[in-house]
Image 1 (cartoon, helix red, strand yellow):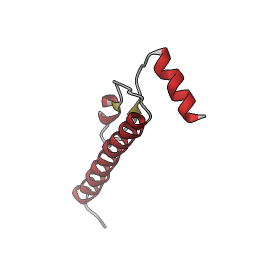
Image 2 (tube, helix red, strand yellow):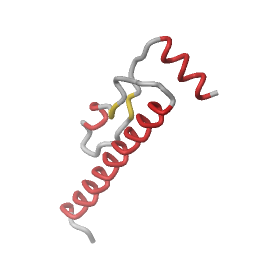
Image 3 (cartoon, helix red, strand yellow):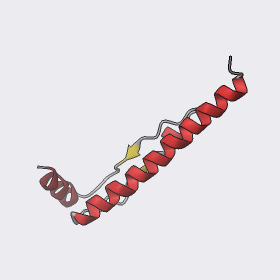
Length: 77
């Protein structure tokens, strides 16, 4: 049987992995958007999603201009 300490260490490693994965995805998405000529200035990991005891990061796409939204929609079609 695992101690509470061992269980918390496993949870910490899992949370750290999730945050690292989210950071990598943000980098990949930013690069892909840049290749399409699109910049989302507020693209980032949502800081509120990291405030939980066991963080489950969300990617915040943020706000953009109508022109940027139009270009993004065109790329996705």
